[in-house]
View 1: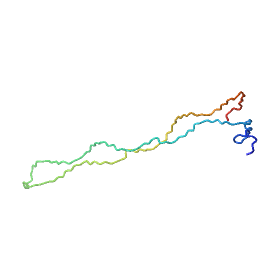
View 2 (view 1 turned 180 degrees about the vertical axis):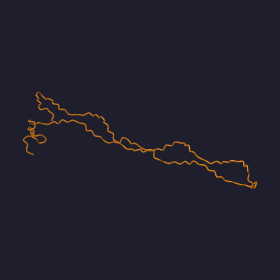
View 3 (view 1 turned 90 degrees about the vertical axis):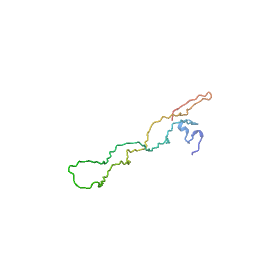
View 4 (view 1 turned 90 degrees about the horizontal axis):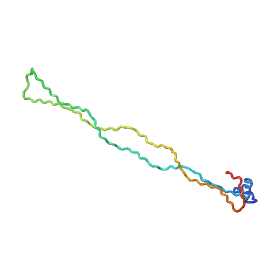
Length: 153
C-alpha cells in the first residue's frame, strides 16, 4: 500500500476519504438493523400405529338337510300264492342315510387398504420484535452543526 500523508485522508479500506465525501478527517458510523431470518426444521410430531384386530360375531344360517325314512306299505292280496313255510324267518336289511351338516371356514379378502403419508402445507404467522440503530447527533458546546448529504446509501 502506498505511504499515507495523513491517517485522516484514508478510510478503513485504504480509499481516499476526500474522494468519496469531499471532507477530510471523516469517520464512519455504521447503523445496523435486524431482520427476520425464517427457516423450518422437521421435527417429530407423533406417530400412528396401524394394526388389525379380529372381531368375532355369531352367525346363523339355515341349511337344508335330507334324510331317508322307511316307508312300509301294506296291500291286501286277493289271490294268494300257495307255498312257503309258516314261521320261517326272513330278514331284510334296508340301510337308511341322512345328511349331516359339516361346518368349515374359508378366508377371503373383503377389502384392500392403502396406507401412506402426504405433505400438507399451511401458513403460520410468527412475530418477533426487531431492533435497528438510529443516528443521534448531540451538540456539545455552542458551536453550530451543519448536517449535509443525509441520505441512505
